[in-house]
Image (cartoon, rainbow, N blue to C red; front, side, top):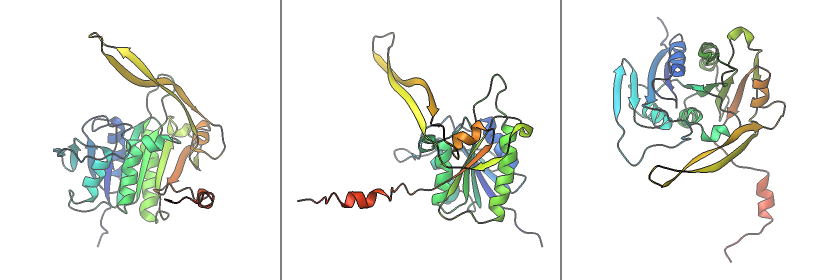
Length: 257
């Protein structure tokens, strides 16, 4: 009697036509039965938003391949709340074009997809590639290879309580990656500003732009791992509570009087 193959839900925030999604789904098929539910277009930086103000449309593109006009969180809700015949054993989100480091994780639709899986008690991870160096493009095959290693480990072990995983892979060929580091979130330094423009009709429009972000140099962070050409794995959770601040705030003696 053979054991049942794991059921793996694959999604992303770059959209159904992203080569990173294809690479991840192909890798996961080595381990289990894959269902793809992905957004119909680019949904980067939508964070954990989900659709409440209009119906969600679904299109079947093939066997267990679905595209919806919703967000990455919607995709995982579909996959874990009854749209599929069975609840997945694993959620894999990615492979994202560009890293999700530090505070990026708050904005990322890819990370939010893994978070949504975690909220439904399904082991989940998000995986992203660092930006290309020069004209090389993305080495999604490196991300896919590590996704297979990580997914196998997750399926064979229990995920640590209360967490899902955020993975960032150096954009290098597999042989040039220097290893794996378990990391904490680093500190991103943004220099965004609102840029005003005027259209041909004389009306104002705006972009959020500015200089490229940098980061605080600190060992043990996700940024530091990528600087060393290592894969970063950061365990994340949903509890934002800053416990150290509770005693201090108690001393404020706040009341409604």
